[in-house]
Length: 236
Image 1: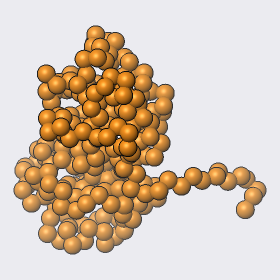
Image 2: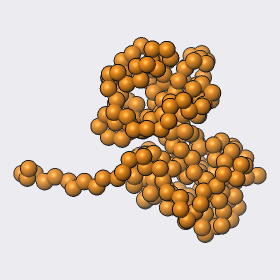
Image 3: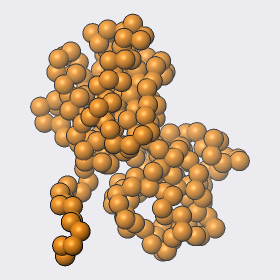
Image 4: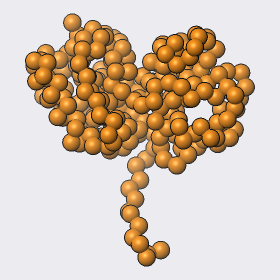
């Protein structure tokens, strides 16, 4: 049985699980915000200890590669690479939008009253202000528009919405509700990222030997990280 540790830290959610042969076995998750540096290694240690699993039993580690929070991605990838180096096991990387988009498409009955083969799925990750990281997937889970950073306005997705219902979801979707008022815009789907969405994707990559180069792998940031200096009162 392939035993894979899945790590998701690309957003405010810190989520880890252990899956066996594509099935969730054990999971720990926090929605409390970007405390990944404090929580991630603790969660992993607790998973092993509480379920009497040795790290040496793992066959691979999978990590959500982004896009998303710069700091969250760095933490998740660093921990994943460290485990793979020390245990001499493969690193698997999955796109954050790919896994949540494909999960929603494959489980659309959770979010729609009846199955619709014409519906599109649009996961959104908050990228501050009215910008999101997003992509589009069809009802079969195939990507029909690539991952990109978009500023959402009234006419966003207009050509698609004219012919398709689109489900908008993820932690960037709610702030777009006022701008996307077309009748075919539906706000329903997984509200946040989770390691549980990674399981099938990671299992498939493991079976196909689709592993990352530990020495050179980096997260998919999509945009350059820009450090800002907090302003001080009274200074303009």
